[in-house]
Image (cartoon, rainbow, N blue to C red):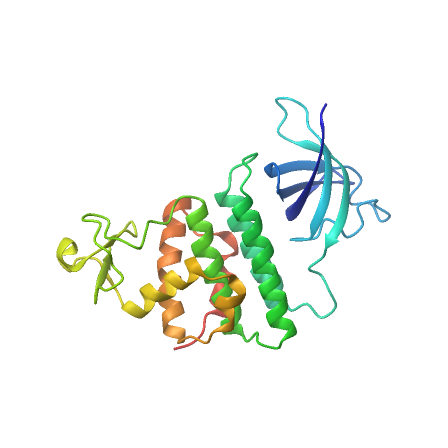
Length: 258
């Protein structure tokens, strides 16, 4: 029964029997891992507060061959998101992100880019709150950033730099049209069919794909741009998962009014 040590983010926990929890982690070395934390629901549990959502931990677990659930041996906090004064909006955002990670990324498949995305997005969220730059629109904005990147890392986001048919560079196009599958096309290939993508929206998506979350969050944008980006992301997510995320309602409360 091999012993594994790795850094990890806690995604979710579920009650199991009277004293245990099933925990879902996204680890740096082994991707998504599900395991049982025995005694985690006890008042004096040795796990303490280490199993709170998006807490970054050093995880030690035992894995048996052909067994889906590993056995959690130890879970030591590296960095907790649950500090004094954490807002309900931030908690809702983390819940939504956790569902996206759990839904899009496969078990036991390492993805260092996804691990770094989670870490950088949490840092940007925390720093923006510290700097008092976090009205509801900013929460909505960082969610859209996370969605686009999660779609890209999971292989559900098309290459937006070129036309999906003729491979023409779209950076200088005055009009880009999207198919129902989200594939971009130039004016000639699209025949003006599909959803028209304004140049400002196209540039916003390119900024998401080329900037860090902290840089992206530091710039002020027109609410309408993010709503259009959000509509695209929502459609692609629902298409990929064949449903809307259960925690999607959090974005409805954060969505800026036009």
